[in-house]
Length: 289
Length: 292
Image (cartoon, rainbow over all chains, first blue to last red; front, top):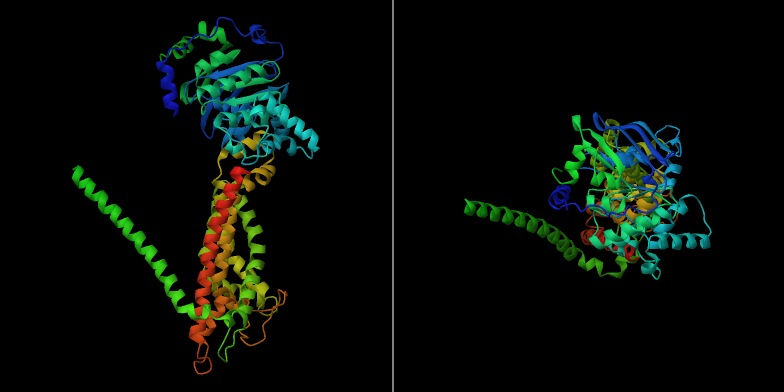
């Protein structure tokens, strides 16, 4: 289950081409959307003296699913975790350029990080439910903002669980510990927890890497259901997953000085079928990685 | 070659086992020795109900037990909040810069101070400088000085042991760091914190040196003081043990040795109960967290 295993697996198995039918009504098919929901401009990042990401510019159209793929160390997680400023926690981390959410620069010192994170939810590599009840997990984000009437709380919690396709499995044990759920259920609970505060964007950092194939497919189903209402960005090592679920794909690679760079971005079908860059083609056909 | 390695391996395992066995044997020996020595006193009703009397036979531990518990609770009232705050600071805010490492080192140095030194310090600060007399409050404050670094360490470790996912999950939902600590991290660390608090309290129980100067009145007479006044003085069990083993006249108190043995046995039993209780409680809290 190490990173090495996964990249090797990618190299050994032929990558199935995505379905010939591109996702219907995908805004990604239009060239470059006039006003993207989220937009990175000349984004760079450093950990101490080591530059991790150089000059990445990426647009994320509203309601789209964008996959960021690339080998280990290419900076894709750094890019993702910079959007909701999670990397601020790492000592020595610095970022340059700008990340615009509805035109507001999230990297600006004036950015209200706490308020922004309520608009930009996140799903992590390992399911990370809090060691409290299922109900309290989903209610957490709402309670942070202040007192919420019990009735309204219950409504929001149930509808979030419903959106995460978990309600039927847990409605009889909302007061039981979230740690008693399976890994896949826990990850859907974390999705419900994020959805409960009604985010406009959800960032997913290899959300299925700790899940079995069935649980993985359920998460992907949910991603498709959220398409159109929530802007989703997913970092994944799994190229089949990127091909299955995303509207657009961005391919990153470690460049000079071990610094991650954006090689190519475009509609998923085009990137997988007809990549413009030789390096993209090499990677997705498994010639390296 | 493999044969030699296997022999080496066997020797290593044997040595480790022998060391552990020695450790265990020491503990069992001490406990059994004290229990046997104190057996007679532990079975005497007067031992629990009467007061210590340095000038005659038939002493009991009742007021000392009360004082010990009083000082313990009072000292934990200071130790837990301050120590927890320190632990939270080191685990969640301080990071690993040179300044915070210096602070951490300072806290750990404090833990290595001999308790007699802390006792003298407590006497100078809480008794002399305030122009007061030895009191339960002064004793409790001295014990706080001894136990604070321990409590800081326990709380820091409890928080650090939590998976980063909890922290990130909370922050990613728009929680502030304070909210994350108060609503997610502390509840999740509760089993470890409960265990730590009880173990820390257990250390208070056996402490004598720090109380000799700060809380004792050596008035081992028939006037037990069960007041709630923190400014009253009073001896604790460990002080009692020390006094009877060193000060009692054998002619006046023929059973001094026997009584001291009983106090020693009681102390060890209570400390053992604290330790075992801490583990059981901690485990129960974990179980409750899982099935809540």
